[in-house]
Length: 91
Image (cartoon, rainbow, N blue to C red; front, top):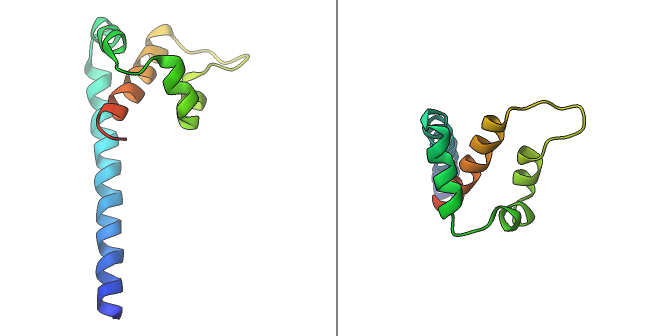
């Protein structure tokens, strides 16, 4: 019984590592895109940005700009693109 439990733990750790690696790879991919390509991805997304933001708390936090916070338009577009793509990948 304990051996099966250990295998389950190892499998969960491996899945967590794969998810983190996948998120990093997706972020790197989005960072390399031209801003126009990001805009095309957002325009073709099956889910609207307001719907995505309403559904995912982490998206609301990452994609909104608070008072006194400064981010470029490009940074915001890339953040939204990353969230849209991660949704397409099952994230």
